[in-house]
Length: 313
Ligand SMILES: NCc1[nH]cc(CCC(=O)O)c1CC(=O)O
Image (cartoon, rainbow, N blue to C red):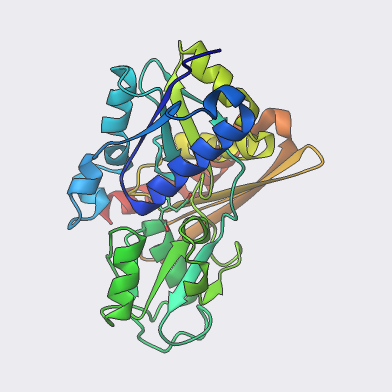
């Protein structure tokens, strides 16, 4: 094939760019035709989420804000592939788009970065923890109800800067993002998935294309990582069942061994005053059903009163 061209659309944050570069490198490794100069172009697209930095996501409309403009560029055929952190992708994609390929997941755990203390348990009493994630906030408070958790948004660099300036005493970030940025050395401690269950899709990169774009599908086919795809399918089915917006603290992690899938999930109130857990297990071929099953189990465990309190929170 001559004159092959792939335009990759991405946000401009350092993490988004690192992810786009990872996709570019994997495409080149898989296809000779994409190794020639200029075959792959990376286009930076500014999203509403990038423009509004000073308000919590929950107020301005949720995670779709980080993907909307990129998806529009895809639909308008200005780009051929969009690279996303799967945890930022809404469960329902716009008509005509799909995510056929997930790259192999990075370690999905959250990392603690702290000025003092070596674990969540040993953070000095009263340490101000900066996090905008209701999922993290709720789980921090489950273990350390004494800690003030303040809203802190912004990309990884901004958060580390607030920590260095002493505006906060600790923060939590996905290890996956820190690794991709070459900043793993900042990590104070890794939190076990028992103490901090990750967000659905955390650590996984998904590639979105137009459903009718057979060429893009062809380029991406060898890059799909089966276990990651199956695990994230289960986690997102759970999220969809619970109608997960970023207003609901929902955590989920699917793990696969010998073609069996085990999905752990948690919902909580943002203040940590209530939480419910569920684990389901079954064949990998039933990933989506298992996700829905866990979601329905959590819904009935929590009961209407929980969801009513969530509305008020
Ligand atoms: N919401 C922002 C976001 N989206 C994806 C990641 C990390 C990388 C990943 O989960 O793949 C982050 C930052 C963070 O939570 O630390």
